[in-house]
Image (cartoon, rainbow, N blue to C red; front, side):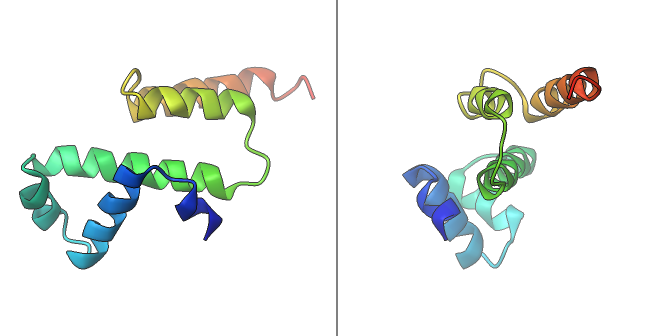
Length: 94
């Protein structure tokens, strides 16, 4: 469970609340006092962050882009597109 320990305390609490709420995004929205789409976006960010931590050889470029998502400087969708474009552009270089 190294991935969990590498998450910040706020994200760990979000995961705990998700589990206690039996995965109900509607309930999470009530707990946090935000809209369902806001909770969905946060969950997507958490999922992507966990996937990134779970991968052994995450390129530093991807990590930097995902840190921008965590800092709310990029949307998750934009970050995914940037990473995809980067991979497409440099796929033939290796």
